[in-house]
Image: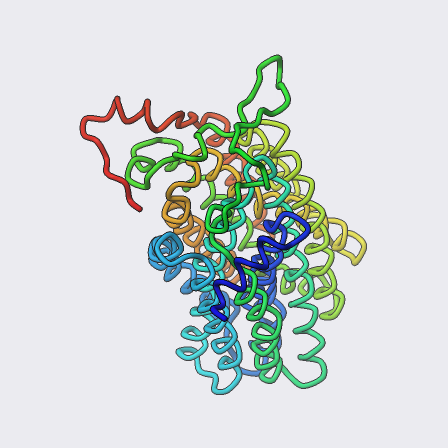
Length: 444
């Protein structure tokens, strides 16, 4: 029987809304992408630098190189998601990620490490990020916040378990073999759910988003007496990429996201090294990453639910302000209890960063060319991650510690919050197109 027919029959016969199965399969992809996460690299940073004699800037630079490459891969990934569907893109991404992760430990030079870990970072930041977020936002509209929250929860669980699993492997078999077994884990966890369950859109199997008979707009609760619309764009229409690029909203979302992911990468990649510099042991420092991930898991659910109840720009700004405050709290960390508290709080804010931007893009620009629009926004994210990973490493190498990093992160997060609060809603693409000097053709 044709595999597509199997998925069609499964979708039609599932006793619950099949979007939850889609969420599960997408969740397996975002779970395993943590093999190339900044936190995972952070666990390897000390043993690799000690054995190979590499600086922390050199090691962190691999994430920066991958982030830069992802800036160019993201638009292509968005196009491929819209053209061939997220299933094909995510399957290929998982296969490549597993192989590149295994290959890191086979032969190690700066060039090969940058190639293989860089490939992993491209997969992390482009096809998996765009493919998983797009398919979930295609299947959910009214419940988009909670669905993306659960997707962020899946990523957060992987963000906690992958580095801790890696540390256990390093302790038992060494860092070279640890990379190999992480690659195997990618294949074991993700390939089957993606291959067997993934379907691009509910309309492909005769369904509607959220399991509704009709696509209808949803309204949020009132804020200061004003009713906020759930979606600024009718979901059956939405924006083409070229039309969206003519709105200030898309550019502000991209730039603000870049600032926030500068904060994200600076902490995630260097947190273990920072904690060890504060006199905290390697295993405890790795466990603090798990507490960060636990905070992110809880935060993903909280911020996702909040994004359904208030205008998305307010939720996004609240995430940024929260992370600005917590970034300064790292300056107070000098023992194990404080390390766990601050890591957990930062993770809680990070959970919002994993969820709310995806909701904002889908809410503002609709489902029509969502993959392509996400492909435009993600290069800003990759650029921010690249700059954050490298910038924090350079500050350490120049000053001898990380303490100068955290005030800078606070400034960037507050700037991002300010920009997000003043972001103008793009409105209805039909009315907007009447204002344009020349009609824009569909990108589909």
